[in-house]
Length: 252
Length: 361
Image (cartoon, rainbow over all chains, first blue to last red; front, side, top):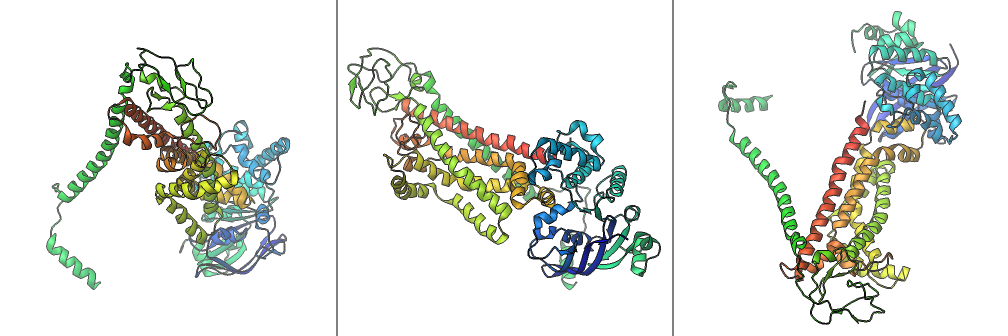
């Protein structure tokens, strides 16, 4: 097992008075893929969004506990959320490229970080697109609108866009749920490639996807972390009855 | 359960058997549909009829070839300042009333003076030059827009992207309340308060002028521009905001580099509708601009707008007179302008917004 990148300690989250996450504790290793599975509304996406403080955008959210990334509590008062999010990138369920050209989409992150020299931007764009395995498909239409691409391509553009700001952790919130099997396969392949360099945390509804792509799997249910272990163990020999029931389709 | 049972029992008595093999005539549905339809068409008809009426009254100006008031003997030309007279050869110097050539029997179409530089409809030699009015309207519109657009757009950016929900819920209705402000009240305020204050600050000569009028009309346009801009900004998909923040952009960067560009067509539409509002605004123009039809680029000179001209002169004009027709011509032009602006906002910019977010191919 690799070093611990993210350490969560007794994290609870409330929407108003509704307790959505109950005392979650887990360790997420570096440069591996960790999958969160569980039925809808179990809190896995909410939990994912606590890792880069995306929940700050929602009113009425209160969070207790600690999330340590590289041993720094990201809920500390002095944390710079903007820089945190540069370090912890996020891919959303619905691909959301900006209504700009492919190039401008990728260059957005570097540009807001103050890079304006064209040669550097060109390099970053090309590198990020290659990393996201979409360079060959879009190299001839870098200046076309990103919205003119297919759903699967758009999602990989979004991945390239987040890679362009050099994150260390990439959070993926059901990145393939709106895509066809071929695009899904491409994204999964990509995840496999990316884990050599990045720590990847993926939320998925699709248990086969979790089994195929992840090294570790965590099952959430009703705001609780039911079980977390190596993926092979979860899918072949889970410790808890509830896990076995879920992965064999008996509930959820 | 009890309640439901009771109810259904009552209903049972009324509609015991439901059959659908025969079309049933439902009078109230039919009636409601017809009434709504009639009202909708009525409002369109009213607009069309106003349009027709205004144009019909304006039309004779192009047909009249004889000047109604034939200049007989010595023609006295009034003039304010160094305006050039219509007869061309004579220049009026230094506020002095000068005698011009005698234009015996010279027939002049009233419509030929429409593009002259003098608006002097009530005189022995009436001239209906609309340039000063156009210029005045444009000047006031520009001033109003330069004042209102940045203010309301920034306010909209603030409330839609930075303000906490509680603050937004105070600011938004307050600005929108301004839309319900009677323009005569704004005009009154401009006339009594703003004019004096601005004169103290800037120290210009005429107390009522394009600047005061423009600012006051800007006040009237702010709620329109603000509300529509706010709508345009909130219509930008939240996913854009999330994506941007997820990439480590600050709120300011997200607002100005992501949300604002995406909302540009909607903001354009808002500004265009604001222009329409300013264009047609009469009461404030009448009260605060000083109403002197003159050609000048100085924002601190008095101006007279197209709409104020109608407002001021329509009540005193001779029915059927050339002057009367010219006022209707001005009305038609205002109508066409605002119609064009609204159409532009409605069809062009709105489609642009829709295309922006939905274009897959």
